[in-house]
Image (cartoon, rainbow, N blue to C red; front, top):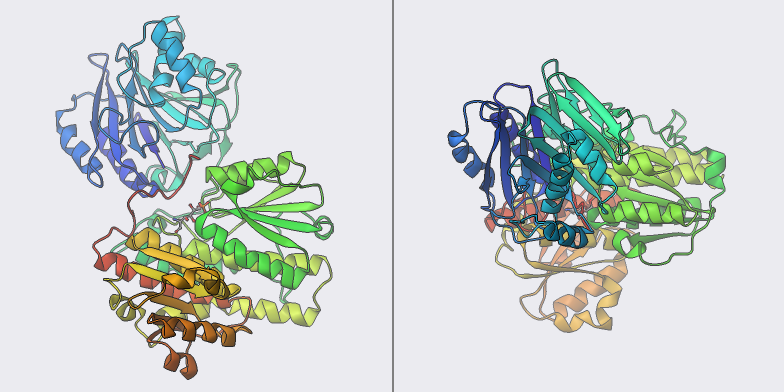
Length: 615
Ligand code: M6R
């Protein structure tokens, strides 16, 4: 969602900030803005733009009017929550005097009460945002004699909600002050200055000396150094980040978009996910996880929580855990779980799965689980993410940065890692023989090669997809692991191509949805050779009998399925553990091609954000 990037002490700060904002575009935004302090005049200069997809370009034009002297500079990409996505509501916001500039990510939950108090004390507001409240609050402290750092620290106790803020003050021209609670914010040091950023990928081109600000900590950045304090003003320490990503990993590197790059990277990403996860005898090893085998063996129930594509990975994780480890497992959508009043106890293990490790619904579900007495671990791609820090243990997918809004390589990596976890749990409980473990390890080790084969096989999946560019109604059907593939395929198509795509367990169609099937409907059926293939083929017949066009995801050489469908998307045959992972690959390409042919931006689909940091 919103992105923050700021610099102080570095040459050409406006260009650096504009570049930082471009790197943060993937988080999703509808307006953008920049503020810089003019040290000569002791005033702020600000520009903002609200033109979907072109706001940063607009800012770059406006930047020609910026003052020659530029001190501390902040930029922001806004994904509207409170107030329309227009220029008045775009950040940075300023206080009444125009002396303090503020950018913000998250939500100030008590903004109504605070702004009523501030208005009655004479503050004039110029936007419909919750953000502006914070600027006026800080103003009131500064007016009372506090420096910017002290003022921000003093405000933390008054605001509720999850947020990250960064501020400049015309009276302290080379200083940036930033603070956070839950929402992401890191800062970095260079020999001559410092930066603040919403994420690592945007910060990497400037520095690798990066730090994670703790909850309710405040950092003051200036060319003279860095000072961290807590909300009471006492000295505090931020945590140094271990950064393994390269700058190139977060660039398109010749691909037309991040999504196609990330699809192509899947074999390598999976190899990284699986690296070092098995001993030579095939015994699963999850050393990262801070839970011993003994502790793991003590859990009687597993609950997986996540959103979107991560939720779909959890569906197959649940199946693998029940099948292999024989532990009752369930999966819940994080935003629902949080309010479910789930009965949890010390014998329940909750697994929060999230690429970003920041998704607010999943984070709150994780917190709720711990509050209710369960142990909670995180599966995260971003190292040191908020969830990674708050959980009782973490395992990382190590898939490299994922920039495209549509999750691809990280989704596959989550599937694979949850399969490893299921084996680890099974082994800890003594449920699998050495032979079965070795066979499962071999199956997973072969996965990168199978995904490579699915990507580069004889069939051109894109050509199949192009036949359905004009279709507006899709149904995706499958059973058990086929249904997890169907759910992910439908989500990809919805979010990228903006067409209706409903996923149903194939056996459920007869209980209602089949009445929607009429000539012209396109039904994508997952017809992989698991134990349910024959039943799925029965569903194919039902669809065709009602005039639907059937596109089947099937295994290479499966002539029976090919004969029964109007078109097929072929993948290599695979074992039960990895079949749903391989099955997703052609559907990523299917959605990608249809979206591109419809003229959509696949990296930044409308209304969506890569990281959903508001409820
Ligand atoms: O970072 P997370 O894995 O927690 O994100 C969860 C969802 O927002 C995410 O998977 C979303 O559904 C993707 N855009 C799907 O492609």
